[in-house]
Image (cartoon, rainbow over all chains, first blue to last red):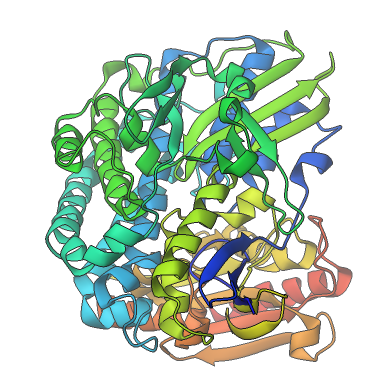
Length: 476
Length: 148
């Protein structure tokens, strides 16, 4: 008789989810599914609105990564206008996007995954939380706060507020950067560098040593990787070309113009989740052959070089065992490298003479009835695609969200962890936390990917082959 | 030297009465320019440091009528003490007492703090407050201004 295990809800991620584990007749884990059970329908209710409003509207999809939607939406708007935005505006958008990478990655590493990484995956659940983390290592907790604050302050100084700034618009940005604000960001940078260097040291010296088995088990499988690289092949978060690579390092698509993304990405749906299942189109959905990963691990794998001195040195260490790292646990390391890179780029950009130039917006009317905007959100590649009429009213909207693109990979990761750690027909809290951590590696944002409202908890259920519920755990 | 009053209004301003915290905080910023004001969808860890830098803090939020058992528009005021969050419920969503505990532990100081909640009538999509919640907002702003 086969069985099924369900974990509901997954905590310390954005959104609501359920994990079901299906056992076969021998009591082994045959399948694992990560379900997303809420739906909000942003794409539908945007129809009929003006595309000018989309940066502000879509930024409301999420309270954690609104800047990513601002970027992709404003870029889709740029293509509808048919303009090239001023150089200073592009620099300022990039600055805000790097601020977003810093604050979001800091939240993921220090506060969402920190309790597991510092206290241990199966440590006392009464202590394995932010309060326990603070008690054990207050400096680590304070570092997370300060780094996140730096990222938020970059966003706030540029946009006027740290969440949902209405500053990024089709054609550029609304306000130039003042010298005073530039100097304020520069003043805060040295502390941010000190923090990320401490975190990298902790990760390399302690976290990996403590989690050898997890490193080998969690999300360790061959897959494709998709993401942006710069026009020269460097690490990129705002623009550039779409690259596709497999885990042997073979480049399947060196650099596709992002507006042609439909040539490489298609979407499947499953009846048991609201999260779509994007896949690499040339390989197809059958047998999940087209499974790919996006986000920090993908980006750090895909690029030929980082392009900044400190991040470049870390990238070499990251690749010390081979050109491509396929272990999902390395998402953490990739996240830290990206924070370091973002800080270096912020410093370089703030020191550029034209960053305070007053010309930051190109003016135009609707020149094209279709626009695609692509950027790299903290969690991976984000696509906004709009169709408008001649007055600029939206006829159709399609959003392809980073978390959705990692959906197949999250399912594979959960299955891999379940196969390694589930024994018998009973669940225990430590197992639940391991499965949750497998999902946290991807730092999913379910608010974004299903456009769901509110806070969502997680359940885990264990089911037999005939669907009988054998055991269940819930929290949230 | 610490700043005086910090007002933290939280909730979702696109969910009708859930925007109460934002609206109240914005009004206070207009009427009392010296008051530090934060509006946010959810309480986040870095607010612990901001809290440790003020003498007094007021959190403003909307409450679910089903959970509170009170009529829409009812104002509930609670004095807060720092309290570590319950582990089982602890995710990235912090509560005010948990934030105060973080301020105390990480920065050695937590201000005197109150949580003001107003029972909402509607949490549907929308940017308007219900009449009873709007009336409660006016009362809250008057009270906080009078206390300063």
